Length: 407
Image (cartoon, rainbow, N blue to C red; front, side, top):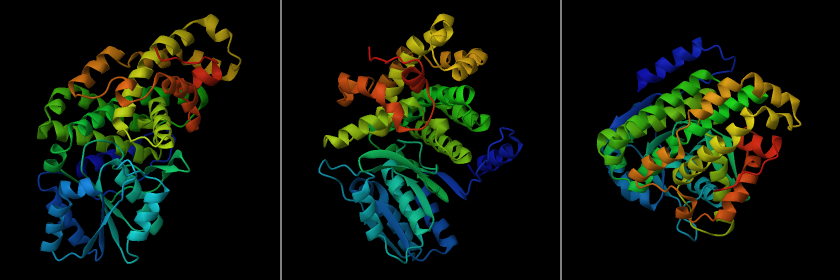
């Protein structure tokens, strides 16, 4: 995908959105059956002398031992930090895990390897940035789109907050490892991509309604990755190498769109706010974690329904807009109504999204994830406070003074 990065950087120079485009400092992206071997070769070329692999018990079994053999063959010194789980046997990107990682990583470390999925990448990204050393991404499952992004969503004092840190200098995605990932993690990765239907709509709304920054290039990269996933849902469902490659490429490209823009807007809207709210509630109650992609896909189904049933009906009825006491936002929505209406109408019907998710054995209702109706309704009315970002969910609650309900 090196040529892809070069093409994106060329397009970014031609983009006239007016935003600063971040350079993409990723030197290599390798996807294949020999990715671990190529990672060792890359580390040897970079002449790193103290490699630290950050993993947990599951990802260690998934491939760290095999990766270690490649490092030994090239006489590359390394150590392994195994992140400890909480009382529910979950590794959580909270203060305890961050401190453990920082204490375990030797002071002379010159590169970190994030060997895992989303949480391990968030912890490693934080540590690498604070220690001012680079890190390399080795995904263990195609479950999230944050491998190549800057953001590290961390739990600090019980609140999920995304901190802008650093991106990896290289990504090595081994298809044999990814294909062996649990099926629910593959479904979660697809769900994280499906969430782009609502996140892209919310991003455009924030731009035209209140002037939030927007980049059509980052939006197009994200949309292309999403559409490629949906078009090849059957291959992804099959779980063969072709399908897994399509999914991991889409997740990586979504991360690159965020990296280019410098924020998570292309890939994170109201559906992610709901997911973060549910996650924080589970932590507060001491309940086992639920996969990020599973939560956001269920949240996407919820919002696909609410956005079509409540938001579109509200903004397209002139008498409804007359009752809203915010002339600035009302005027902007009315001026850009065709654009807003079009992008929210492009979100597929919830039934269609549910059908795709069910084929991948993904969850489609909050109840399947242990999320009560009371929690869903509370999140629909409070989750928009978690980010300073204008979404249709925020509009319904704060501007239209409507309390969305789970039906």
